[in-house]
Length: 395
Ligand code: ACO
Image (cartoon, rainbow, N blue to C red; front, side):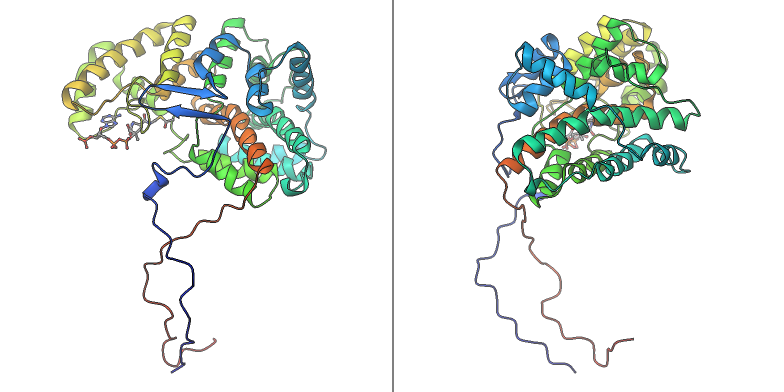
């Protein structure tokens, strides 16, 4: 039997075990923004995010998050120019993009993740460790500008349609819809989508943002951080389920059926989609504004959604008293995106596009004051070192 080598215990003290899911643990300092769940408030660099969504354009808030301040007219023009120039496809990717769009297991988000990685490789994005802060921000601008172009090209080719180049005279949200249909969107639809996108650019130290930071902490490049962040967003516990609230409306079908359907669901132990939140224990501020946006768009689905919401809140307070369950961002997000013409498979990818602003801002902040993120774990397996089983040999 082989004699196990004697391993001396490490000199360092045993690490303390953080709560599962790192709940309540602060792992960084940030100047980008924060969420205050008890108050129903979140902000971007100190400004109430819902106020920004009411009064600013996508590009203004993009400048705020990435550069640090709301832009003056000259700074805004600079960002708009960068944003339009950054929409150009990198050389050599168009055929590969079309191949991705025709893959048998195509999903819009999986294809986008692959296309982001492909584009970053084509652009030869360099490790953030080797870049100046200005160079990191240039990569950030390029990738935020490019991501919706990749998504819309994949989407159209997947449907057997010709891709549509973005109209340089349109801002981020309007061009998004124009690349989808080929037509200039109406101002109400473009503004509704723009407000949705501003509201979802960032939201505290969420899982995908943390993922982007961990990747950046190794000194890796912007493309790797974004690819990883999209992977984290793909999970149903994070961004992978905004169409489920709309599916619930479909399952209810008519206003008269709402009460019975919702009661049966809750009594049967099911979760009502679009209600409850880990952090918000009062109204989710995104849901409040998206409700207003949906109302502004109008249409029968909005009235039906309002009826279902009111019924759901009543049912939840009766059957789940004291749990503080309110409408969350997903309930009216689906209604807004559906009304502006996005299909359900495009909901999470649309969320991914707006969130690139938050992710790239987090990458820039991490790179500017970096320390490798390398936590520990408590080993709970069989006592180590273990001797190899007797006679066990190379085979
Ligand atoms: N419908 C019915 N009951 C609910 C709901 C809901 N939507 N949400 C929570 N509850 C109940 C739970 O059953 C539990 O009841 P119990 O005490 O009788 O066991 C109690 O409220 C507390 O639930 P937790 O699981 O501890 O709440 P948690 O904070 O972990 O969950 C979550 C938050 C996952 C969002 C949950 O509310 C949920 O599943 N909602 C529905 C799915 C949804 O809308 N997801 C999108 C969230 S928004 C976003 O993440 C971007």
